[in-house]
Image (tube, rainbow, N blue to C red; front, side, top):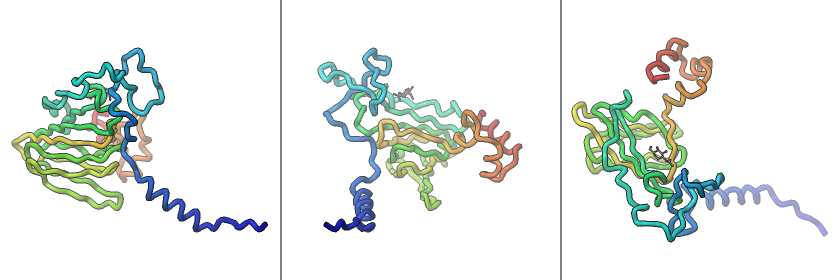
Length: 227
Ligand SMILES: *[C@@H]1O[C@H](CO)[C@@H](O)[C@H](O)[C@H]1NC(C)=O
């Protein structure tokens, strides 16, 4: 019997199919109504490989597990020289959010304060400006900037993983924005911090070449960023 080799384009077709059927996803869907997070301090909380926190026994779940006032109060945007603070919901202050693939963040920004360029490796973000006037923007992988000014009630989307920022363009009034993110643990990397004050540090030679700056420039930037 003659065995026909499988043509290459068949594999190409399979790969294309896999790409179409398996788009990049947010957190995996839960397999139960809810999985209220057991606190990391709980003696039962020893499952090392679970994606998220282990669940509270459903019989012990209370309404309060699904409620939080974590976002009621402003953060402390004067605590850093950028002039912003982000307060988040997570499985500690809102245990019912565990496995839901969701989180919220309130962003308080002082007059002329900035949330410096950063990215969330695990989530897209949609933000609604509640107070003040905020210049927002993100840069896509073709290096194009999409930027906009938001006033109260207006929203903007930052696609997953892309570098974005917020700037309170008002010199007199604080700004407040509320964001939803499609991960219970979006993660954040602030570009300047990651580049200049990681621990241990990226070698000076790398930064000199990458940013085309001198060793003195690097020292100055590190000092400015508290490194
Ligand atoms: C939730 O956020 C608080 C405040 O940022 C933080 O202290 C805590 O470690 C976080 N918990 C989890 C499970 O990420």
